[in-house]
Amino acid sequence: MLNGDEEQYSQNLDEFLKKITLWYENDYEGFKTMYDAAVENVVPYPADTPEEVRCDWKGKDIQFLCDFFAEWYHWRSGVNNGLDYIEKFSWINYENDYGMVFVTSGPGFKMTADFTHLQGLQMDDEGPDGQKLIEKWVKELGPKRMADFEPGPWPTFNKFFTRELKDGARPIAPQDEDDSVVVAPADCVINMIVDELTETTPIPVKTVTMNVRQLLGDSDYAEAFIGGTAVSCILMPDTYHWYHSPVKGQVVEAREDLRGVYYGMRDFPELLNKGNVGYGYDYEMFDNFRRGYLVIKTWYPDAEGKNSEVGFVGMVPVGLNSIASVNFLEKFQGLAPGLTMPVPVEKGEKIGNFMYGGSLNILLFEPGRFPALQLLQGQRIGVLEQPERTAGLFTGSYHTQSRRRRPLAP
Image (spheres, helix red, strand yellow):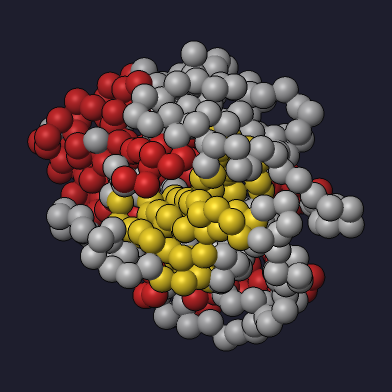
């Protein structure tokens, strides 16, 4: 689930709490120094923050940190409560440079990696606790949402979280095999991010920044997307968590092992603050999260519908808070440029999954190839939600004023 990390992970909560307590007492690699600086410089959360996601980290000691992790570890609750703990933890680095340093580097980074590993062990547990959690989620999701999926039983919560769709539950559009049509890679909230991607220097575009070469791990294919468009596809925790190819073509390069941070969104609540989740957010930070990418060679049809030009589409699955997993099917693993033959992929073909935790897909398009989101009459543009789900996953409607205290990009 977490690959290539050298730090020895804790095998249970007690071992983890003892470790970070000793780190604090001995100021291991500056752990005490950085934690104390982080909590000393905490920025107050906005006054309209919902009570259930408030957590005041100002001046809190190591015991408070340990108690928080212990409570989070034992959450074993409903669909939205895990997200609540992520938001509570995020206040330690909210608009706080010292907090950002603490959670994204040195021993603070090792701490988040270790806790993430523990959560992964929980979600892979085949014992009764995992089954109780599955039962609670199934009940909260309800028959309507569960009707699209193959029925259980599921041996672990992660198997439930990456549950399979029933045949025909997501028909691929259009039926006439039009290769110019791009389809959604996942069940997601989707919006445009950037329409002037840059090669190496993140520059603000409509308050958003992105470094496409870094996002693609210095791939030579990054050049194809300079000046192009990126589209964010954000997966909510209660939805289908496999991702699929948005176009037909050949996968010419793929990696699922780009290492990075587990936590450290400077303003995590803002990502969820509007019904249009992620709109206007600063995506630069995702260049540094654990992620993978695929580059798909495809063909652009001309006015007569004939495939006349070769082009590329990129897809970057990003593992965010809690488990940070990016798992490709074997077919798409380790496709290094010049070392392996391209792998054919069909539009809508399954690529991989995210296990429990936050997840995001970023689609990359060449300049002039994807100017807007375009829908045909009668196609789905959304659903009429139950207020309870809206309140749990979208912390304000699209028309509400942002809670952001100041812009994240100049």
